[in-house]
Length: 117
Length: 114
Image (cartoon, one colour):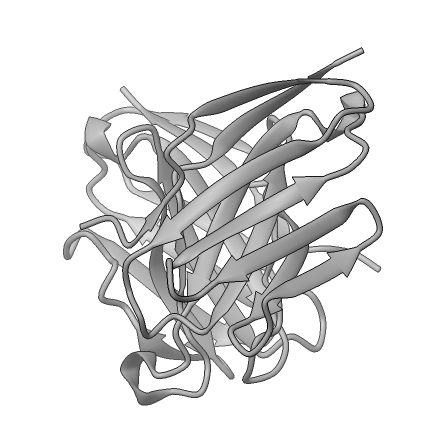
C-alpha cells in the first residue's frame, strides 16, 4: 500500500524552463509535506516543506503547492538549472503516528529530473 | 558543522556474516532514524529513536535486524545473520525537535551480501 506516489519516474527539461514534479498521497492524516533532492552516492538533502495549513510555500527558485482536496502536491523549479539534475523525493508526515508529536516520514519512489543545457 | 556521519560507506560480505552499520547524528539532534533504500521498495523507515530510546521499530524487517543507540552521539544497525536480500543502501538521519523539523541524512552505507 503506497501512501505517497510519484507517478513520473523521470522528467527531462531544458535549462531555463520550468520543472514541475508531482506527488499524490492517499492518507488524509498527513499534515506536513517535504521535498528532498538526492545526488548519486549522497544522502537525500532537504529542499522545501509545507504544512497542511498552507497551500503554497516559496524558497527562491523552488515553490511547493499543496491541494488538500485532491491530495496532491507539486514542486516547481523556475528557472531550471543543470545543477538541479537529481532524484527528487516527496515525503509526508503524520503527527499523530504512534501517538507521538512527531510523525514518521513516508517517501515516494522518486522522480529523476534531468535538466539539459 | 559536521553532518550525519555513517560508516562504512561500502560493505561487502558473505551471506551469514554479521554486519554492523554505524551512525553519528548531528550534535544536538534528539531524533535518529534508520532507513533502507532498495529498487523495489524505495526509501523505507526501519526504526527511529528519540533521546536514545527506540520509539517505533515496526519497519524492522525481521529479528535478524537490531538497532541500538547507547548515547546521543552514536547508533548502530546490526544484521545477524546477513542474507543476500539485505543488500541495499542504508541511510541514517537525524533531526531536532518534536514537530515538523526536516531530517538530515548521512551519505549512506552501500551493503552487498554475496
